[in-house]
Image 1 (cartoon, one colour):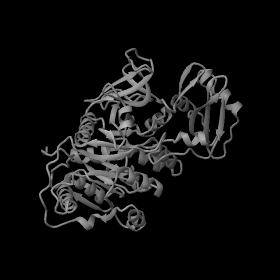
Image 2: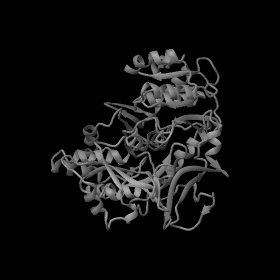
Image 3: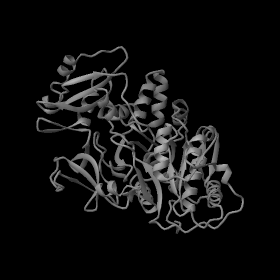
Image 4: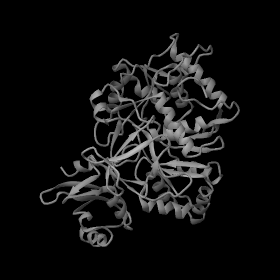
Length: 495
């Protein structure tokens, strides 16, 4: 392990680290390229002193070079979503006080006017690759290393700052918990501005000495070719991707579906995360592939905090137990720790995995901690030692007639209906109940639904006070880049 505090790559010189299209790159090649880029970034300086360097890059060798190069040169890495609209980019760049932006290809042209207007220097990786290496700075683990932006499902995205110590803790706890080894091969098909793709797949894989296949977009046929070939032994995705795979299976011959599912069957691990995995989906995937999805719980501010076990029972609808080195507890509205099981409360987290601060926002930082615990805003119950997420206190917990209802639980039940493909439940103001349950529903092609029919179907499947009081049929639910439903946009439809 290196003395420097920043996350490192495995030092096996001949092992393939990255596969991008028909090109592969060994750990030695990648490490040398990173050092050349870091030297170019320094440009004669001894240390970037936490300069914020943004990068607008898809999954690629350039992405890995830039992120690790920024870390090695002493900067703060600010990865951006390549699907971002200009107003979103303006917010990220101004919030972080970015001075330089790294991009490539077609993006260089599209970003030019924005960067000029914000006095940001726009560069490519090739611009900074130097032949003569300079001495790289010693980086303390306590130094700031990365700024990611919250998903913004409930408010404007905030810059979440993690130290190198934080990032290392997030990586090493998962390597231990999920048994990463240099024999692992995994596809990276998730956006690389989010903790899931950056830490759980890319950083864990490269730390462990595994091989990571990079995909700039979710190309189902190409990825399934590799699955059939037995290339991968680990697969991580969000629930939306598993749903899209099942939908894809419905468009091809049964014999081909069997071949693909037989490719998933021997994998050592399939993981679902970043949004709740419905029990229906959990069971469908198990029936198709024999894989028992490992669901876990995390967020931008903590990396992963809770996980179903690698060895042991993985429970549908539950996210498991606290990970190694992570403390988790539930608290009530009076900030008292809940010790009795099956009483819901807010999840709070302690550990080296927890972020340092919201950038330039001391008030939000202070408000998010209480007595050393990070307040996640997510409500859960503990059942036989396993955490089950009920939803976010601000939007998924519906207070109706004296009950606290879990929107996620109701959604999970409604998804069992054969004609419902997507559903989101929210609370709407109600003079009698305080809030009443409303469901936004997307139906299978050719299906229709009346409220009375759904109400009748729900009877016996959930308590009467959980049954939606109204429904709205829509074509598709609004989602962000990670597949999370943006429920505030649903409320806007009611205005």
